[in-house]
Length: 107
Image 1 (cartoon, rainbow, N blue to C red):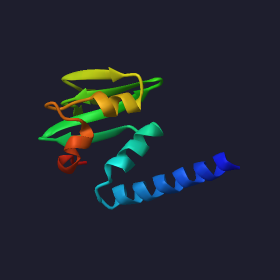
Image 2 (tube, rainbow, N blue to C red):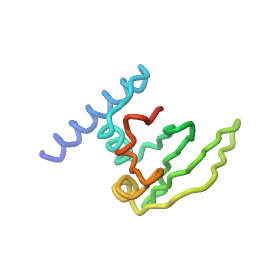
Image 3 (tube, rainbow, N blue to C red):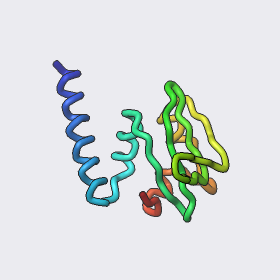
């Protein structure tokens, strides 16, 4: 019963986050982390550089300087992490984590 309740709460939170995204409202860092934890693949921009996060379970990859052209995607480089938590704790841009720069992140 507890797992069903927790699952419903997470599903409800995800629905609210998706509504915010549809209305071009910025999500919080915690909402960003929640979406990543359910294997959402997200892009964000910081200092005019696009970063793309993709999942290939059990690994998580972040692409730096991603460029989308028609049906192709190129990137300057990828970094690989064991899981979302490791990526959020260890990926750095100019010595700062995503959480540290969150106020300046754009979608």
